[in-house]
Structures are given as C-alpha cells and as structure tokens.
Length: 189
Image (cartoon, rainbow, N blue to C red; front, side):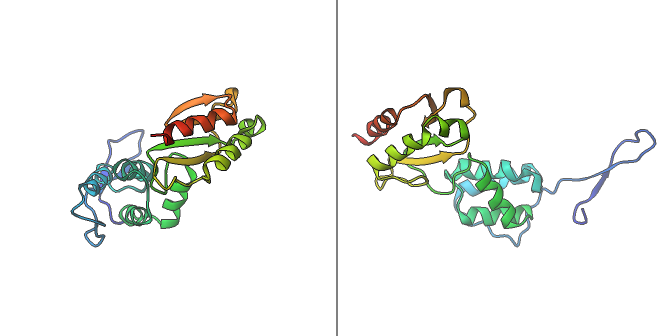
C-alpha cells in the first residue's frame, strides 16, 4: 500500500476505513513487448481498468489469450512485471486452469477428459486411439496446424462419461471410433 494513495471512506459504526486508490498508471520502466502491436494495447487497457492490481491476474491472462490466442513466456513475464507479482505465481495460475493455453493451437481443438469418472468409463482408450491413429500426443498440434489435442482433468460432465469436446461441442459416452472419425473429418480436405 505504500505506493498507493489512500482514500477515506464514510464514517461507519465508529470506525474510519481507508481503501487504496487504484493505480491507473503503468510503470514506465516496464517495456511493452511490441509497442506497434495493437493487441498489447488491449492487454494494457485491461490492466489499467483494474488498476494494475495483482487481483486482476486471471482477467489479464484472459485478455492476453483473447488477443494472442495463447499465453507465451513473453506475455507471462510482461503480466508479472506489470501487476508486480512473481512470475512463478503467474505461471502457476496459467498452468493450473484448463482454460489457459500455453502453445499456439490448431484450427480445431479436441479435449479429452481424463477425470476419474471419464477415466473409469474408458477415456484413456479414447485418447490412446486418437494418439495411435493420428500420431498426435496431448498438448501437440498436427504439422499442418489443423488439430490440437488437449487433455483435461475434469470437464464437469461426469454423468455422460467418457467425454471429449470438439471445438467446444461436448460429446458424451464417446467411443474411440467416434473420436477418431470426428478428427478425420477435420483432417480431410
């Protein structure tokens, strides 16, 4: 709080409260990775809107991913410096939540759930068949940038396990053959 001005709040129940004013200025010593790229302006605007508060980390990461499609090391370092939080915390949040993507993705994305219910119901076999037929490991994208394969720890649809999503469309009780045929549709011109 030493760098923030304090703003008094109305008197309430005999206690005088103070809250920090939001910081709306970015530290000029932190260079924007590519100042000519307008997408960085969107990211900085999001951080400014939240007063460069560390609590705006998740929203800032969403802004970076919306602008660039994924989170790279340069973006994570910039966000950490701008929000004045350790890079390890930024990286921890970015890798903890399934919604954040750390590599450029393909045109289409298949997410296979490996949560307990899905795993018991056969999602490991679905994943293995996708890997076997398409020579694609989790976290990878085909060389032609058509399909990315991602795994998730839980998609929250345990009642229809095993589950996979194809470009966000959830398919429950999926068989290995169904998954492979859906990916083949994407790969066939």
